[in-house]
Length: 217
Length: 217
DNA sequence: TAGATTGTTAATCGATTAACAATC
DNA sequence: TAGATTGTTAATCGATTAACAATC
Image (cartoon, chains in turn orange, brown, green, yellow):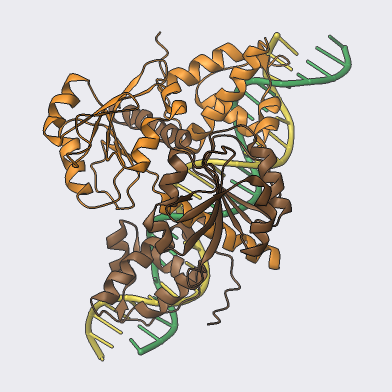
């Protein structure tokens, strides 16, 4: 399918799209053909105008009095994220967190295929974990090429993260999803997503502190 | 120690504070007494004026030509997050992800103490995992009271999340850190931080898509 | 037609950045 | 004094919200 999106969707909008998708898929199950911006807004606790703006951004248009086509929205959002094709990823660090990610079904449902894992611990190498083979780093380049891997998932706490990332970038990986708390330097052409546990906790603490102060007033 | 912060720090600023803290702690190790906004900005790849605004927000003042007191900044940031006192938390769902969090040393270093875990699987109950006892849900209220727990960490994929959250809120928990992809409804007085794996992956995909479009121009 | 809903254009808001005066 | 750095005040920028005209 060829849906051509010339417009660049801003990040806050892009992050709301999956939430819309989830609601839309439920509506589709219930046989609903159309949906209004106010319905979506109600479900998401945001303003209808924001929904309309988001939908405008992905260049879907609706019909006054009737709303937007559920089918059309679903297809456009799915193709925006390229979730109609599977994404090949490799994972580094088969510790407890790495194993949890390898076994996560929801990620698989979104089209993420982890084609190989790597670990420096020889006791872990050459075994299957959640159906994924653990390799020695020696085979890195070979596997990236063979499987056309574009996403790397980093699940080891710290250490040589930057060296590995440089290697990955030179091998052609376009997205790095890091669970390490270390800061990474990467070229603009490569994308990172940092989801380490400490920054999540830090954000929680920040919100707690803010709330305390707000409610003290 | 009594550092009184009347000002409410905005979230983007609050999220940068730990990164400053990390740099400041390294400076302190090296015996540096003062630091300039431009030094911190350089390390973090942001503008010096933003650093000065952030420091203004936590109400630390500096000295022209000399900079800010490293010691003073460290103390103020640590006390802002209340990291000088430990935070008591309980964890729900001792699956692979839950175990990974129970064993995470970095979280412990930030003062997070997981005082108990809960799981509905009777085979997991009454065992220690990473030094933390797994309880049946029956003991929920008792443990929250006894340990003065204010943070709950949710590590099970989905299901009865909302019911549990309602229970936790009524028991007096003030922060919910959720790794479930389910949306939660909570009162304004309680804070949530949602760090489920799918939303991280979604954000990565969104950035990948944006980057593709930007570099295609 | 009437009325609900989209879609456009302008206003607002919060965060960042800029300019420059104050200060050691 | 001269110059580097803070701190204040204003400008900009991006995202959200508001107002209302267009449309089915």
